[in-house]
Amino acid sequence: MNSLRVPLIRDGLFQTGAADSHKKNTPRPLEGLQIVDVGCGGGLLSEPLARLGASVTGIDASADLIEVAQRHAKLDPALGSRLNYIHTAAETHVCEAPEKYDAVVSSEVIEHIHDKNFFLEQCVKLLKPKGSIFLTTLNRTTESWLGGIVAAEHLLNLVPKGTHQWELFIQPVELQDILEKCGCSTKLIHGMCYNPLTDEWKWSKNVKINYALHAVKAESN
Image: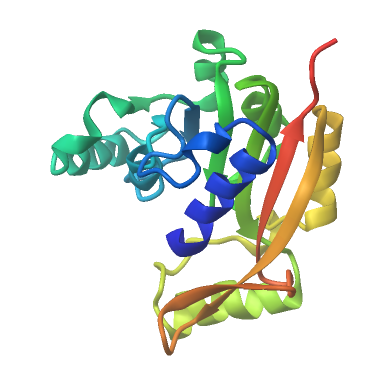
């Protein structure tokens, strides 16, 4: 999924003007930016963002996953001080770093959250004015039940059985509505399609299963 997620975040930050356009074709195009990966897990997305030059903070409520992420990060000394992991929740981190970040990333997380309004409120509070939030998740449709649960969990064994609860999936319009109430405007929504035969992710116009969303926080008065 990183083949889609990383370019989405990189390009979105250039499109909003957060990233320096002069660095677009350099090895570290996101240098100087602060990004927080909320629900970072083992750091699968945090690491490549740090390699693009951003200062990345990965946070997760699981101490075990943070330990895994820290251990893996040590395998690449080049990441240096640009990557930091903290065992904490978004609402706790807000108290320590309000409006600190140029971007909040939360990928494959919100479909596991019961109180989505509260979670997104905390994520937005971490953002600077005009900052970007990037989310990837699963739509709540018949297709997502068949693809995200029946196929992914029971037929293809892509994720452990019981990973997802279909009723917690969120439709794009619902996600947009919550973000709008948090003071964010949606810039784009892309469908994401996984091909199990080639083990590849591709962008799609179809948002009925997986999709990505980029929204921008309003500028403070």
